[in-house]
Length: 98
Image (cartoon, rainbow, N blue to C red):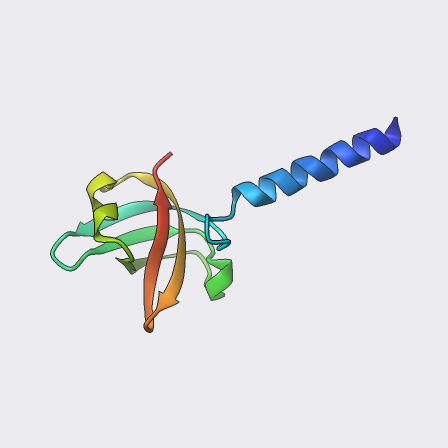
């Protein structure tokens, strides 16, 4: 019985880790949108650590990899997102508002 419980907790931990990965395998972070710049296709996000970029929690401006992303966003909104350096710019590659 102890072995079954150990296996169950291991699987739950693995599932939680997978839930925090984007579709392209990048780690996801939590944040709040504080500003949207539709003219330049940028968002400011007050976010938690970005492990893949070795960055601590902070507020910063990101480009959006797809301009259509901006349509579903609003200031003050809580988001889960992944970011990467694309052509030297910090860019949100995936974002979810759920």
